[in-house]
Image (cartoon, rainbow, N blue to C red; front, side, top):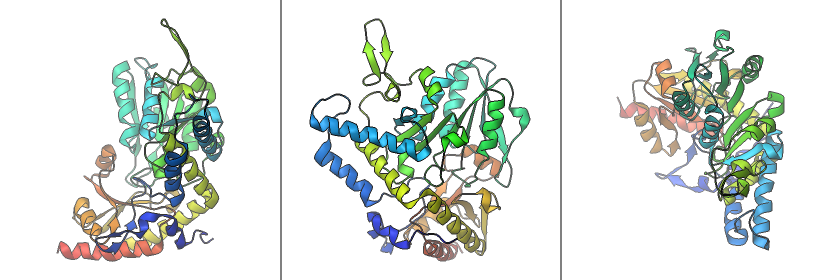
Length: 405
């Protein structure tokens, strides 16, 4: 099956008209943040030029239009992952979504309770749980990662004391696709709540939270063609209704007395203060764009590129690739090192060729220790990438070699 996404899709993204050091931009860092199509950029511009007003507060036309557009964006996200409107909360990013859960769920834990994570977690799904555990006296345990970059699921780690299991859907370093369904089933058997970090999966593969039976799931707008400053937290309604808010103040209240406060209905109970209205509406536009292309088409496109990239990089002498060799267990992310050249140096030289990749520890320092490296180069693919982008990268790596001869 050949991809249905044509190379001309780049025309929708104004940034690809730009030259970097006189060279066409080859952007291979979408795992960090994706580029934005004209439709999303225009939505932000149109909002501020034509519609801006605060939401849920005014009975005049501008406020009503902004409110309807912002709430409609919640509905688009809900449909995107097959959730209810009340189950979609807008935050600043995945990090804030997970912090919300860490405080709302974690502070209810007690000494002797356990939080189960993995060694491949992004710091955003590790540090909040680590710090909350210190405050309440809970223990943090970790599922190990094999040298092949796959999760080792040890049944002995799932105990009656395990209250929260927080795991990334797809590794932001190696692209490893974790067996989320199996993990959810094991957590369900011991009564633990499951938090899924979907920052690297929601932009790339179809997600159905009902089919997954996920309790909570978090992802970011800026990694899926939307603007920065907007994140999503999905939670089962039954849990969200019982949870205590993380932030307090305007718009998350129903009634305030000097003695006490009654909180608002979902999802506004967790959305305190004036939000990123333009960003939320523009996320809705990004969802429209992805839906029109089709998440299955995007997934297929990236699978083809991933296979091609692996084949081409494997031909380059001195390349070490990290993560699963079975590409069926992997998404469109490749972590690699090139000879003994530091990833920062590789990235800097590639930049002179107009190529953007990431070099560093990728906010996953514990995983670097597991892999016995300080850092790595990382290329990450998205719907606007092509095989020609990979060819340009491979050719430029020879320039890197010559510089360090």
